Length: 78
Image (cartoon, rainbow, N blue to C red):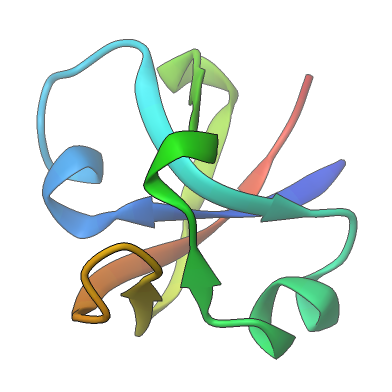
């Protein structure tokens, strides 16, 4: 079961990177989807084994560039 949710860049999720960079996280899915932006200076890295499968894709906006980026919505565990 997911303990929190995160936006992960689609390219990152489809890569072999470990750890995976998460762009923004929230305690529940509604909170994550409520704010579709992220600050590039506030990202984190998470072990690939702790990243659940994508539950869907959306676009979020990079606060530095203002441009949209495709992301996967993933359940995460500690």
